Amino acid sequence: MIQIHPTAEVSKKSQIGEGTVVWNQAQIREGVNIGRKCIIGKNVYIDANVVLGNNVKVQNNASIFQGVSIEDGVFIGPHTCFTNDNVPRAINPSGTVKKEGDWIRNSTIVKKGASIGANSTILPGIIIGKYALVGAGSVVTRSLPDHALVYGNPAKVRGYVCFCGKKTYKNNMMKTCPQCKNVQ
Image (cartoon, rainbow, N blue to C red; front, side, top):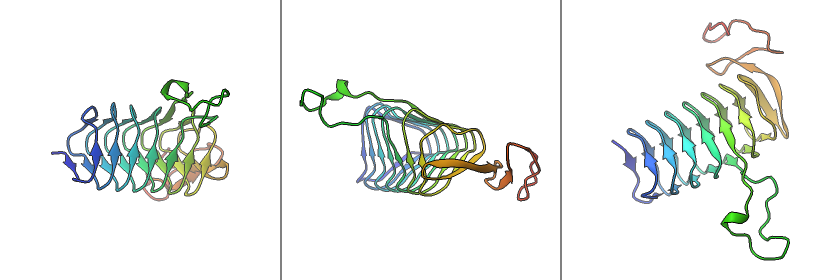
């Protein structure tokens, strides 16, 4: 069963998977494809043609703009903003207001199991690796390797994390996770 709050605005031209919950005042545009068992929080904006995998959790007030693809099991913290244009302008050089075909969008991919902390900004045209962990308030300006722990403005790799999210090794040298005992 899909649960959509009556105040949510969901395009009839979007697809939402079984078991997904859409909370109040969320907006889901045309061409959006959301997988199974996702949670879309209050006041979330998902722009046209965005793709979300299965078991994705998008917290309140997040904005996910065109060109973003999010794989299975990703966590998007509250107030996270995915951008999609490296040179945003309201007008063309001629002074005319930009229209749909005037924008140059870049694709962003968030790989399986990654987590994006609250109030993070993700610039366009990057890949966030599998199980990467982006600290709250970070500005991600470059692609991130799998399992990277990043934070800051701009976000920098500060270590690496296990599948469970605990810091496990530095400089890409593997060791056993102290939390779940998983060997990376």
